[in-house]
Every structure is written in structure tokens, then in C-alpha cells.
Amino acid sequence: MNSIRVPFVNLGLQYQGMRDQIIAEIDRISLAGQYIQSPDVEKFEKGFAHYCGTQDAVAVGNGGDALYFSLLAIDVGPGDEVIVPANSFVASAWAVAGCGAKVVFVDVTSDYNIDPALVKKAITPKTKAIMPVHLTGRPAPMNEILEIAKQHGLHVIEDAAQAVGATYYGKKTGSMGTTGCFSLHPLKNLHVLGDGGIISLNDTKLASKIRLWRNHGLKNRDECVFWGRNSRLDSIQAAIANLKLPLLDQWNDRFRAIAGRYSQELGEFVSVPVDRPYEHSVFHRYIITTEKRDSLQNFLTERGVETKVNYPIPLHLQEAAGPYPVGSFPVAEKLAKTILSLPVYAEMQDSQIDIVIEEVKQFFRKKI
Ligand SMILES: Cc1ncc(COP(=O)(O)O)c(C=O)c1O
Image 1 (cartoon, rainbow, N blue to C red):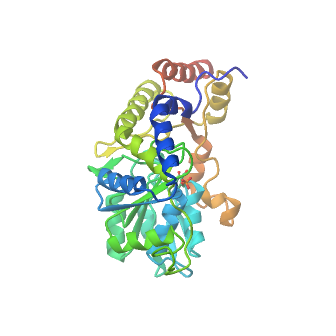
Image 2: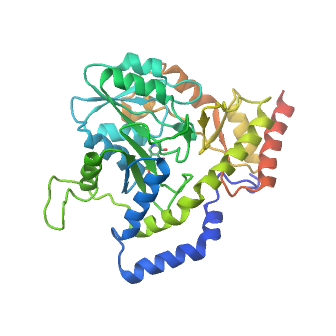
Image 3: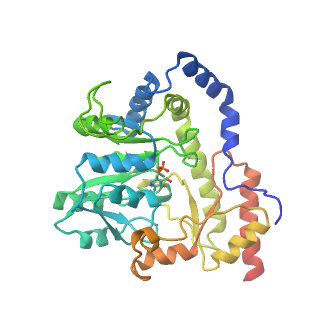
């Protein structure tokens, strides 16, 4: 294999640009010894809620726990069902199963997001919530989902782990459901230096409950309301998130600009993501589809362009899911065989974007 010319991500570049500020924050918090629940956490919660347009936000240890605590807070438990798209990261399903509830998968549409027509069909008297996932940074069809939820008296827990900053008819993803759940994992558009997560919401009661869940169920140092977990966002991570939040929109603009160039140049060779006027996708992943996915991926690897498949095994075919028989969710299964994620990150150089475009074109010129 040739040396890597375009890595799939390059986290070091963002760190390099912010190194002095980050080190100063680590120093400040370390000297004060306030590693846990310093005022930096509350500052991030307030800033993030403002950014999302919600009344409150609760910072937690990771995006999976953001989903899990949201479901616990609305009393999802054994005997309940939660509807989840078959095409997502495993944590979407775990959060439901972790509460003891049944994960009810439904298929997606060709834009990778949950199919509202199938959500309707999957509702039973046991359904408690719908979990749309804004996969790849593209908003799920929230108008339809919210309408279905309203008709059936269901909660909507938005998995916005991949979609921080995206909008749908002008509303931020994560601001439309009962809660919005975000991951601050290093591969996300807004990330800390390790694991982190945050929940945006407008319900003060739920927010208080989640604040208990993330801190052992303790209402103060000594009194425990229920047996909770430890899943807080560390003070240093919160301070780093505070440094980064004001830069998020400009980073997302860069993601969108790179996606725009890919779509313009590659649309005649592969299927490229749709661009709808009412959505502002943040392209956490830029995914093309082609029947020649495996040979294209091998070719790009040979040419030093790193790519990934998000995700090669749909949730319902994971061992953890049962699994279901092949053919249960045909769109998700077809996507798993044809999708390819191209490198996209704010620090990508124009010359690297050119390389990716040129190599994809080269592949099709040679093969067709
Ligand atoms: C769609 C989705 N949901 C949930 C998660 C879980 O987030 P975390 O890794 O922070 O637990 C992720 C992270 O990869 C994700 O992409």
C-alpha cells in the first residue's frame, strides 16, 4: 500500500491550532484541583443550550449515556418499546436495551434516515418513544416524526450525536424532540479530548432527573434519591468544549463546502447526498453510494486515500440484535453494501480534496 496522502481524519491538526489555549485550560483547572463539576461544566451547558435554542442542557460522560439517561428520564423500562432506525451506530440500540426495553427496528430511506411511513406501522400499544437518528449530520424527517408522536402520545428522543449544528426548517437538530442527545467523541464535528456527551431539552423536571442520573443519584454530597450512575463530563473536557463551541459554525461551514465540492465533481460517477433547501446538513460523514464500492475503496486505499464504511453491518444483523433474518430491512442492507465515506474534516486542505476527487474520477475512468 502507498503512504497515506489523505487520512480519513486528522485530529492532531485541530489540536495544534488550539494547543496553547487548551494547555492553559488544563493548567488552570489542575492548579485549582477542580477536575469534577467545576463552573466550566455549567458554562458549557448554558452555552450549548443557547446554541441549540433550548432552555437547558445537561452534560454527561458520552453520547450513549445521553440517549440512555433520556430514556430513563421518561421512564422507559421493561415492557416498553422504542422505535430505532436499522441504520445507525450501535449505541442507539444499546441505550434502549440498556433500559430493559425492546428495540423495534424500522428501515430507512435512501438518505440513510428513518422512514416515517414505516415508523407509523411499527407502533404498538407498548411503544413509548421514537428515536430518529440524524445520521451523517443530515436531519431526520422531523415534521413527520413529531406528527406521528403527537397522534400517539409518544416521546421523541433525537439521536443528534452526528448532527451538532444541523438545522431543519431553521430549527437546530436536538431542539425538536423531548430531548436531543449529542456525542462529543473525538470524531464528531464538536469534540473534546476523549469521551463526552450532552443532552439539550426544554423540560426542567427531566433535566433535574438526568442531573441525578449522571451523578450516582445524589441530590447533594450525602443524600441519594435513587441508585444512579457516574457519567459526568469532566471539567477539563467542558473547558475545552467552551473553547471550541464558538468555532463550531465555521468548522461546519467548511464541512459543507467540502461536501459541496465532492457533490459537484462526483455526481456523474456515484450517487451523492441530496441537498434539500429546508435542511442544513453538517456532513459529519460525506457518503457516496456505488455498486462498485469494494473495488473503489481498494483502489482509493492503494492511492493513499483513506475511506470508511459507516456502517457495514446494519443494527438488526448484529449478533447483539438476535440477529434478524437477512432481508428484514432491505434499504439498510442495500446501503451497507454500497456506501462509502470519503474523508471530510474542517482542517482538510484544498489540495487533499482535489486528490480525493481526482482519484475517484480515475477509478471510474479506468473501469467504465
Ligand atoms: C448516531 C450515534 N449515536 C450515538 C453515539 C454514541 O456516542 P458516544 O460514542 O459518545 O457514546 C454515536 C457515536 O458514535 C453515534 O454516531
